[in-house]
Image 1 (cartoon, rainbow, N blue to C red):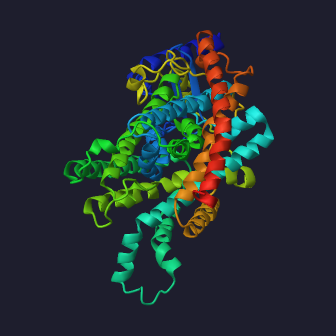
Image 2: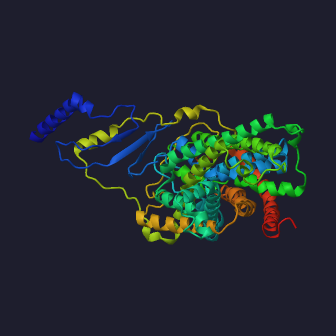
Image 3: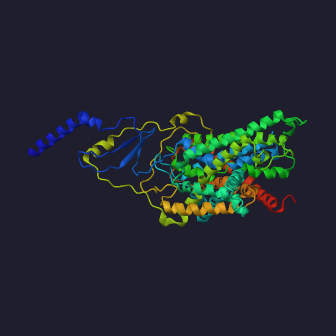
Length: 568
């Protein structure tokens, strides 16, 4: 009787507490996307773990209590990829247009390269999703190397690591050479103003002084943990490229209007290349301008709520934004050949303009800013490969903290409400292409509890990241100081490594991975209504492999011939 009375009294008190305004204020509003279980200061002042929940179309909730979250927005993801893709390589596009036919075949080749690049971007993401469904808030763990290993085994993992590392390393070498050439007038002006040329007799030192000074200033940025931290740099880099492109377009149009040459400007417009070899020389330049595949999965790992439509919108706007810029710069830059003494443009179109042109000086400075901001995007992937593979003791696993919670917290947590739409949700309503990412918004399933929650970039100490970054970055700068021109770097990379990394590996990995049955068969990429799309995707993969494998061999042989034997 006593126990019954006590039980009834306790139950009545609990019901009254639930009805009080104080209990209602303890609950979060229904529109919040996150709920923080904060310990009541009047109880025990104990810290409480932050729990993020998200509710999707099917009403299921997934929780992320790891303390690590996806922070990338579509805008930051777009700028990070564009800052890697768009850079000094776009200055060689006018030459590629002129060699391949700047009024017909050149633009068509650029369009075809953009289409294939966008397709291969999607192959990488689709392969990763087929292996493991992404968590909506917890960062992913996928990388270019992990996809290659899953498809072709441990040896392929080592090969892909070396491929990505050398692509990033020689990309940093090429950008260092380009930066040195662009900053040469500034470098000479500084040395003359300080009267240092009379004391410094080393031509190597005076030529590379500014380049190494910039490398010194940028080195701290190469120690950042994730690429998302560079989102503001990506936006600034793209703005600088836009200013540079505007300067080139303005001077090219001005030249066509004011040029006293008796030949009309349209006489320099061509439909086709003059010879097959010129077409073969131009192809690596088109391919090199779109290389950034090694950063697609790391950026995807950090993208908030990576649903098919959001991923499709991100990849589509990234690829076609770069295509639009390339088309304008390539066509107008090639038309400037009408204003040069030889009727041709250089591999670096800025060399065709007057060095004292104040407008182009602004463009040169913008290019220097773009190259400077792109250095971390090239160093960080290579740095992470070394830390992940050869310094395993420097990584730490992000463990979920175990925290005692009060009874009030136990009452509060299950009542957390559904989340509101995430940033960028309005973009989901935009129509996506009819590919594997063009599906209705589908729920994201929670990954297993024992899944590895280490992000693609390894969690390591600042000292380790600094030392590895210095080793990579400064070695690249030293190699660049010994290289005479940028043509050697772009020609060799675009004809061999770029084709292998950009087209052959994504296609081959997709063919192998999608032939396996995995835990992600219920993910919308694998629904029955996508079977037809997958079939045609596989057919296209086989076609690309059949085309680019012999093209890589022929193009590499042509690049070696141009580099070591000239035009002989």
